[in-house]
Amino acid sequence: MNIRADFHSHTKYSHGTGTVEDNVVAAMSLGLEALAITDHGERHPLIGVKPSRFDEMRRDVDAVAKEYRFRVLLGIEANILSPKGEIDLSPEDAAKLDVVLAGFHLTAYPLRFKDYFKLPFNGVTRYICRNSAKQRALNTEAFVRAVTEHEIDVLTHPGFRLDVELKPIGEACAATGTFVELSSRHETPDLKGVEILAATGAKLIVNSDAHKPARVGKCEYALDIVQKLGLDGDIVVNISDKPIVFRRGTTV
Image (tube, rainbow, N blue to C red; front, side, top):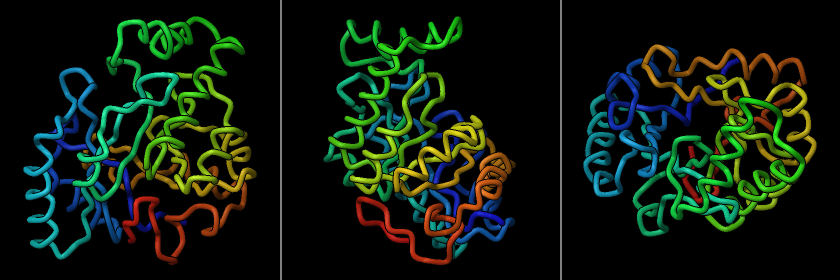
């Protein structure tokens, strides 16, 4: 079993080590059909990509796609910033992209100072002990509202750095047509979490979250869980030969 396309990879535009071309060459060497370039959103300190660079990135992606005759999508991994589900990407800027991913990153800076004491605080305290029921509810609300109020194609690595309840997140993703990522890089969700998500009717997607070309398409952890649970292409969209239709309309 393998994926036929990897929809989460980073380049030197944020803090990946390779170029768009490097990642594409790596994807082609594995026989993948498509690759998404999804660098970090602008509120990721020091490395976040400002929307003013999207046109430059589009030219780069399209030039590489043309040269190699390979499908390359331009996207972003936006940051979920608050329990309201706010993200660091406007609808106008999202319209310039093929796919929009979003997830929580501990170091991303919120829109308001008071929000440092919500998701980021919960992320820090998780290093000491499991988040409380109240904290988990707040974290879960952030993910649910993010996919409900924004056109997010893929929710990335839920449960990484924050404790969440996966059942309501899966239900929200199923209702909105948002794919839930099984992340090999962060090894999350675990087997029980994937089982919970699959039971909600949410569609799942296996991605590498590669930060270096050598990791593009390498999804051993997630694929092992998919095999153990006996999940098929009706649930895990990028192990199927069927067209993959993202929430915002891009089809691969």
